[in-house]
Length: 115
Image (tube, rainbow, N blue to C red; front, side, top):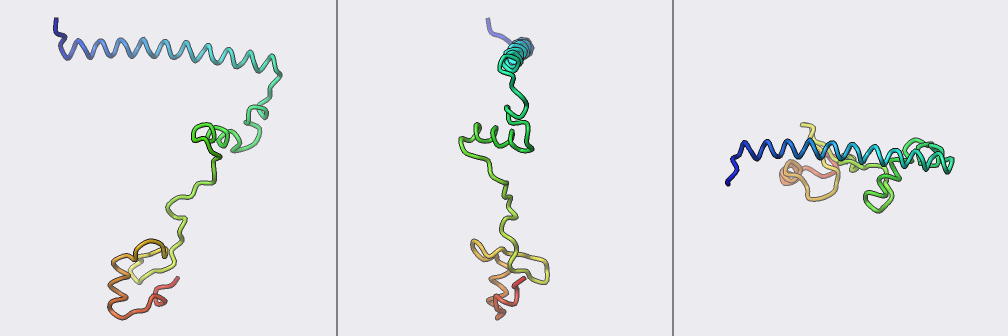
């Protein structure tokens, strides 16, 4: 018998509810085991990496990526070294932007745009 779309959607919802219940039960079991281990070994929050600000994040990041976490460097890591009157900027890395190439072709010097 071929199932309809609606029947399959209901089955998916039912399976999702069942999966959510199983996940919750497994989480509860894991938490109970962790609490038991904490009691047995007398662990503190500092032992678990919660004692210092950011230590837990470094530990978690190391486990996720396999390397120590570093201070995040966003796109703004290259400070603007050149700026024109319109507010266009360039950090001096990569190819020169169009606005700068046009200005240089018009006879301006790169130092005219230095910040």
